[in-house]
Length: 199
Length: 222
Ligand SMILES: [Fe+2]
Image (cartoon, rainbow over all chains, first blue to last red; front, side, top):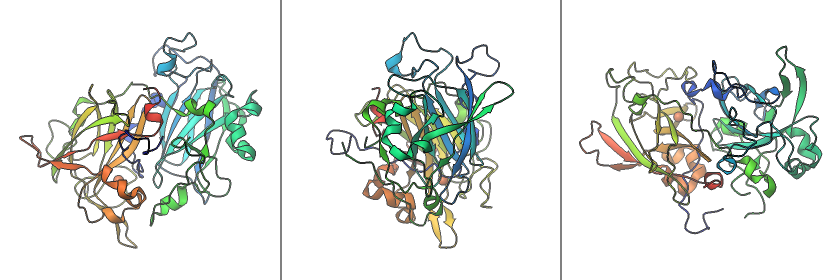
């Protein structure tokens, strides 16, 4: 879809969020999707995981002040969208959207292991906003999952596929599986990012 | 449809942009996976009812220093549909160019009557309104004398519509040298607030800023 596609309104330009995205806008419920809200009975179905890692710039420095957004299917592999309204596989306690500002550049996102959507391996879409850029997008996969070998996104990046697979790093005392995924914004070892405007 | 992804531009004179902008061409998303890249933000927003007025820290507190302004507009998708019930998160510097953010170490003057933080929702027609203090420009690169022009940050979330942008002010001398504005080229004018008469509202200036959430994500589940 481009401006050449005639009767579309010209889009407002994306712009950087700058270094001062307000900490005031943080919502703890969007940083831990395993529970619906603190103090409420109701929890997402599935295997609890901790997805953690660093966001690094092209010199290997931590990208402080970045804002991460996460998007994933529930344990049944169903995304909660208008298209799946009323689907029997919807988990009422899981919407699949997470957001956090990471002051240091290291992140830790608590969620459940997504199920495999049809034709896909389990994955989480990660959007990164930060000073110096507008928005970059990628998908992270999980080491050892069936379907990684045939996932179309992993196949599309060819030899770079290992850069999109989070490493399993054991289990916490409370039973959450830990996965480690570093995001390299630029330079050596750069993470593959995707174009959701031209695709 | 283009057959290759974009190469992202690096903002001139912006060190952080040099450090953080991917150098590789963006990869195309296989069609079968396209929909999985479209987050749908749940409408479970927390916005305090007084936050539309960012000219004071609370309804019973004095006005902050500087010029109070009103900003109004509509949020629509590229196909013209109103984005109703969307969350606008707004943040801006005070009259002196200082953010009340714990990581703003500029040393510029703080204002005890200014937070510069507000959240408002769009109505059924996609309209929004807030008051703010006209923000000060600030020196972003003292070594080369490059300023960030006056701007108000906005983040818009509504269903599959998602945009983080900035509203700029027309005729500001620093607009031409702003790294991100340079990357926008002629399209920069879309990000300018349009001055209008403030009417009998208790502000000194008023601006219209209509927002069009573009890209494929905005209209995916339309
Ligand atoms: Fe700013």
